[in-house]
Length: 121
Image (cartoon, rainbow, N blue to C red; front, side, top):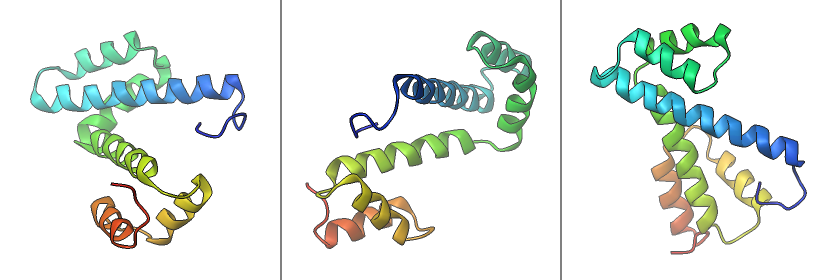
């Protein structure tokens, strides 16, 4: 979304809805595994958050079977956004460079990018 005119206003709205859905999933993940919410309470939250009725049960099952996965996903996205803000080049170069590392821990990639002089402090 940092490139003006790349997305239409409708696409930006859809991306914001995805961010909202992911935030709700992180909250359910945490509340469920802390024992603060039952499966039924998690489903009720998803319904109130606007999830499609057909997806609610599947989302809670996913949360219950893969603890922390939604939180890990969110942390990864936020980490990539943080690296992008520090990147000295343009967006395309950043993503090409990031992907060139393959499946490496983001903290290691950040150290390598910093060592190579690609990041602002």
